[in-house]
Image (cartoon, rainbow, N blue to C red; front, side, top):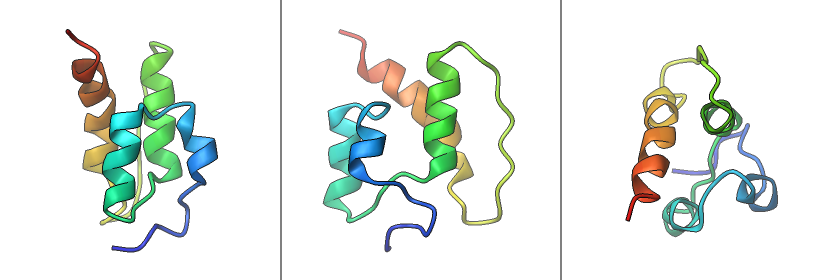
Length: 75
C-alpha cells in the first residue's frame, strides 16, 4: 500500500504520533493520513470529533489510534 495522497510528512506527524506508531507505519511504507492525525489531535485535547471519509479512507484506524496510543502509554 502506497502512502495516501493526503498523507503528510514524517516531520509533520512526529509531534502527534508516538515513535512506536510512527515505526509501525514506516515499516510498512505507509504514512498516517491527515484525518487520522486530526483524530489523534482532537483526542489528545479532550475534544469530541466526527470523521467522515470515503470508503477505504482509514476511518477505522483513525477511530482506534487515539485509544491504542493511550493504551501504549500505560505501564
